[in-house]
Length: 183
Image 1 (tube, rainbow, N blue to C red):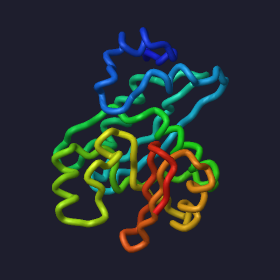
Image 2: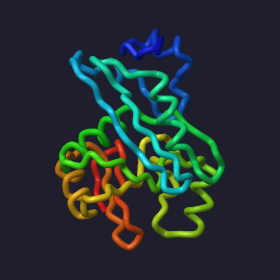
Image 3: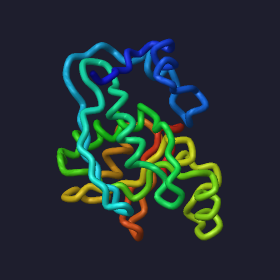
Image 4: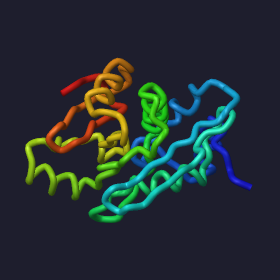
């Protein structure tokens, strides 16, 4: 039987997830309303060519086994390091995909980045923040086949749930669950 996050700090810790595990914070779990239904996401990591379709939330609870798969596909493709991705980030991605009416797999350019990888990329490019939310499991660089980058960008901005960056030359949109900002 698959273990389910029940939204309590005790259950969160029993599952072996601590606050030190990147950015997963228990307050975000405790604030989740008890809804009926499911949230599923499909992803395609363009660097590893891995694909995933997973139901990560059911009836108000996060599924631990599904979350492990999400953390794996969003790992640092340079180092292989992974991180417990922020729960709000996946909910943002799920809602964004629904807002743009696209049910195709989300193409992942970048998910988690280890601090070492991030520093390497920051030295090579002005477009990489030294204190990136990628290093905390709170950011993703994405695109969606069949949906224009401007539409993804504008929709994410209207949602007002974190940072949104538009990179037309590199063909992706950055989303994160940090403070609201845009570039």
